[in-house]
Image 1 (tube, rainbow, N blue to C red):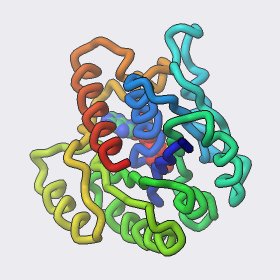
Image 2 (image 1 turned 60 degrees about the vertical axis):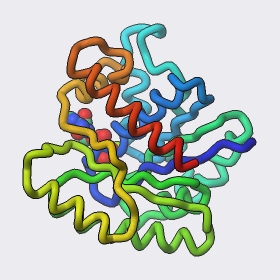
Image 3 (image 1 turned 45 degrees about the horizontal axis):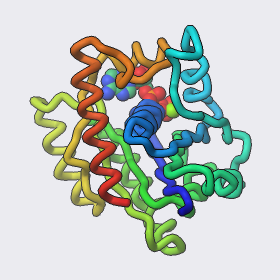
Length: 219
Ligand SMILES: Nc1ncnc2c1ncn2[C@@H]1O[C@H](COP(=O)(O)OP(=O)(O)OP(=O)(O)O)[C@@H](O)[C@H]1O
Ligand SMILES: [Mg+2]
C-alpha cells in the first residue's frame, strides 16, 4: 500500500512545525511504521537537526530527506517514495504564498496545523484553513486537525483560542503539547524526546505518543 502523507503546515513561523514533524516521525517509527520525514522548508531545520547527533547510534533513527529545492514540484518528488514507506511526514515552510504547502496538501491524507495560544497564530490559522479547503476541492480525502503546541493550560487565552479554533471548522486534537525545555535540548542533541530519559522528556514523550495515536486513528 502507498504511504499515507501527513503534512505539518501553518502560515506562521515558529509555531513548532519542525518540532512536531520530527517527533511524530519518531513516534510512528517506534510503532514499527516505515517512516520518512521530508524537509520541505528552505531553512532546513530538520536536515540540520538530523545531522546534529554526536555519533551514528544516538541520532534520529529514521531517514530525513531534503526536498526543499523542489518548490511547486515537491508532490512529484514525494510520490517517488510512497511505495517504500508506510508514512511520510512533511515539514512545510511557514508561508502559503509559495506553492509548496498547497501542492503537499493535494497529496496528503492529513494536515496537522500546529498553533500556539497567540492571537497571531489564530489569524494565520484562518488563512491556512482556506488553503486546506481549496486543496479539499481536488483532494476529497484530505482531513485537517489543529494541534495546540506550547500550551499553558491555566491561561484563559488558551481556552478561548480552543473554542475559536474549533469554530474555524477543523477539529482540535485532544492531546496538547505543553511548553517543555526538552524539545530545544532534543534539537541541539540531534535526537527526539523519545530518546531522552529525564522526567520532562518522559512526560513529553507520552504526549507525543498520544498525539501520534490520535493521528493514526484518522488514517
Ligand atoms: N512544545 C514546545 N516546548 C518548548 N519549545 C518548543 C516547543 N515546540 C517548539 N519549540 C521551540 O520553538 C522553536 C520553534 O520551533 P520550530 O522550529 O519547530 O517551529 P517552526 O514552526 O518549524 O518554525 P519555522 O516557521 O521557522 O519553520 C524551536 O526553538 C523549538 O525548539
Ligand atoms: Mg520549521
